[in-house]
Each structure stands twice: as structure tokens, then as C-alpha cells.
Image (cartoon, rainbow, N blue to C red; front, side, top):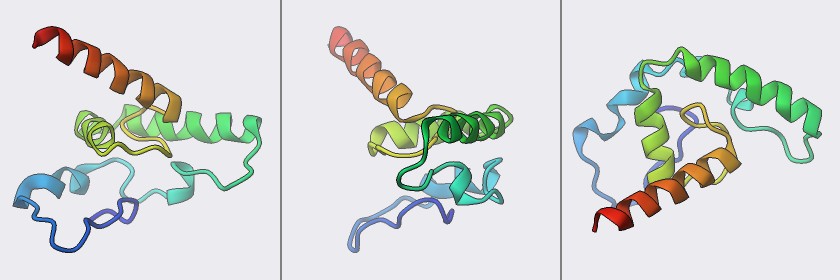
Length: 103
């Protein structure tokens, strides 16, 4: 399991393949602070850090899996699948609208 992801609560069943994508993630050897900024981080510092994180994500072979994971959880903080917090919230709403139209 990646060091960035929190473990599942005790008693929660996981399928064997649920976490396999993480082994192929471009970020697996990057510092966690690249994807999750410190409290009180200034806007300019955040923009630089997020840009660097997104550069790693852009090269990632499992970017879609990561984004799907973060949207399904939903993860509120950090950079996941190449999207920051506000971008993921927007994508989550877009997917929900698309899903409700299909029903």
C-alpha cells in the first residue's frame, strides 16, 4: 500500500486488485509533501508545489485509476490523478450530473 493512502478501516473487505495500481504510480517514490501541502501554506507556494505534483501525475501510467479512487472516496485534500482539491470537486459534480442523466 502506498504511504500516501490511509488504510481501510478494520473489518472492511478489499478485493486483491483494489490497490495494485499504486505499485505502478509515478509518485510512489516522491515525498508526500509534494502532493499534500503543510497547514498555512501560502498561495504562491501552493501553486508551485501543485504544478510540480501535476507534472509527476502527467507522466503517470495509472493516473486515471488514482483519480477514480480519489473521487470515489472522496478524498478532500491533496493532488490526486493530476487534479487539485477544487478541480476534483468539480469533476465529482460533473460525474454525478452525468450519472443522473443516464438514469
